[in-house]
Image (cartoon, rainbow, N blue to C red; front, side, top):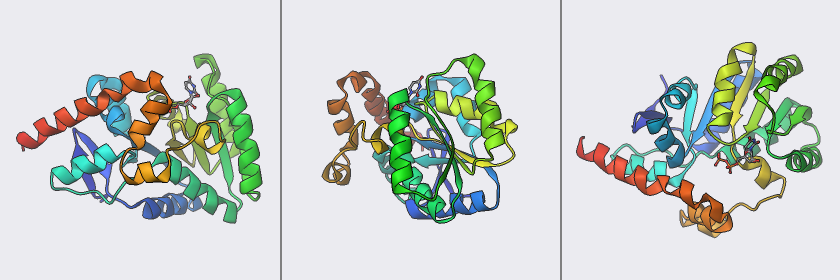
Length: 243
Ligand code: UDP
C-alpha cells in the first residue's frame, strides 16, 4: 500500500524526489504502464471546481507534490510529506537514468520551436537516449488518436507530456488504455525550461520557497492563476478546522 497524505481530497504520495525517480525507473524497466500527476495548489483548486478533472486525476497511479504550498499544507495538518517532487526534477532524473540504459523516450508538448530546441538539447546532453517521438503540443482533438497510435508503436519507456494542466492529464487518461507499457507524466512548462526558452527560478528563490513568486513576476499574465494560492490556503484552513 502506498503511503499518501490527503490534501483537499487529493491523495499525495509521500516519497522523496530521488526515491520517486528510482521507483518510476524500475517500473519502466519492468515494462509497466503508469500515470503520474505532479500537482501544485492550482491543480488541487482546479480539481475542487471541475468534477471531471477531479475524477481523472484520481485515476492516476501517483499524485506527487509539485509545489511548496502542498508540502506546507501537509505539515500544517500534522502529516508531513517528504518534500517537493517536481515534474521538472522527475523528468531530469529519469532522463539521466534512461541515458545509462539507452531507453526510449517520447516528448509531446510546447510550441514547435521549443520542442525542436528540446530535442537538440536532449540529444546533446543524453546522447544514449533513443528519442522515439517528439511533437509540439498544439494539435487538434482529431489528431489525438493518431498520436496515441504513434506512441504505442514507438514502444516508448517514458512519455513526457508538456501540454499544461488540465490538458495533459485529460489526454493521458483518455488514451492510457491504448498502451501496453510506458510511464506517462504531465510536466507542465518543463520543456520550456529544459530547452532554455524560459528560465527556472534562481536556486536561492527556490530555497526560500518563492519559486511561485518568480513565475508570476517573470510571466505577469499568470497573475490570475496565482489567485489559486490564497484560495488553497483558505480551503486548507477550513479542512484543518474541520479536523
Ligand atoms: N501548451 C501546449 N499546448 C497547448 C497549450 C499549452 O503544448 O494547447 C504548452 C505550452 O507551450 C507550455 C506548457 O504547455 O510549454 C504549459 O506550461 P505552463 O507553465 O502553463 O504549465 P502548467 O503550469 O499549466 O502546468
